[in-house]
Length: 420
Image (cartoon, rainbow, N blue to C red):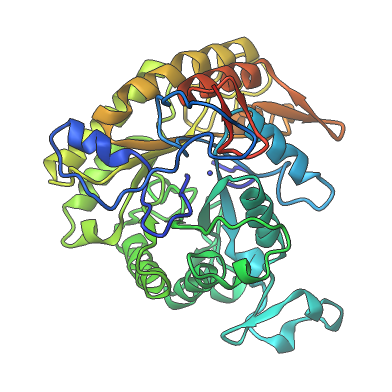
C-alpha cells in the first residue's frame, strides 16, 4: 500500500495526556487519573458568553495531512490549515520523514550549496524546515500535531522487495532522530523559544512507524524488529521528555489479532502509551466493530485505561476510477464517501467512552485523484485539480458532523474557538 505520506491530538498543558479519554475509562469501571486536564472549548478571545458543553473532548477530531497539501513549498499551507480549523479539525497527523530530514550521515557529504539548509544534530546534518513550517503554522491556529516518524535514510536504511518505505538497519540512529525531534518540538523544545509563527503548542505524543503488520511497511514477521525499534525510540523520547506519550504504530487489516500477538510478547505492553488502529472497512458500523475488537483485546490483557486512536479512517471515492484497492473493500463514490462520513461521526461521539477512544483522523485532507492510481489517491475531503483545492461533498458533511460533535456552530480563527 503506497500512500503519498501518512494525523492526534495532544494539548499543550504539561500534564495533559489525551483530553477526556479517561472519563471513558471511568465510565466503563476502569482506572481513572487526576492528572488529566482538558482544555476548554471556546477559550479564544473571539467567543464570549456561556459555552455549550461539547459532546467530545477538545482535540478529538483530526485529519491526516500529506501531499499535495504538505510538504510542498508551492502550496499555501496556512490557507489549508485555516480551512481545516473552520471545518472542525483540531489536530493533524503527519509523516515526519526521517530520510528527508537527514539524507546525509556526515557534513562531508552535503553539497556546498545546501549546507545552509542544515543544522548539526549529534554530528548529523539535519533539515527541519518543513517540520518547522507545519508545527509553527499549526500552533499559530491552536492545532495539535501527531508526528509519525517514518522512513530511514539510505545511510541507515534497508530496502526490501515489495516495501514502500525503507526500514532502519539499526535502532540507534532512528531513536536519536526521535529524541532530537522531542528536544526541538516537545514540552521544553528549542523551537518554542524562537518560533516565528507566534504560537506555542508543544508536541506531546509521538507515533513510532506506520502499519508494520503489513509487508508494505515492514518485512514479515515484524514483531521482533519493530518492537526493538519501538523500545529504542521510547527510551530516547522519554529521556527528552518524561511526560511525552509514545503511540504504537497504526495497525491495519486484522489489527486486533496483531495487537493480541504483541500483548503475548513479554513486556511489550510497556513500550507504548496509546494503541492506534486503521479500521478500514466497507461500512461505518464496521469501523465500530473493529474498534470494539481492539478494545476487547486490550481489556482482556488488563490494559483497561490505555486509550485508542483511530488514526486513519477513510472511504476513497475511487469507484470507477481505479481497481487498485490495495486489499481493502472500501471503494465508493463521492456520494458514498460523504454518506459514510456522515453516518460514522455521530457513532464515534456516541461510543467513544465505551471504546476508550481518544480521537480519530480522517485519511486524508486532500488527494491528487490520478486515474488508475491506488484507491488512497481518492481519499481526500478535497481534490487537487490543476493547482486548485476543490472541496468534495465529503468536506461539507465532515464539517457538519465535526462541529456537531464539538457543540459548535462556527470555529475559528483558532481551533479552540467555538461559537455555540
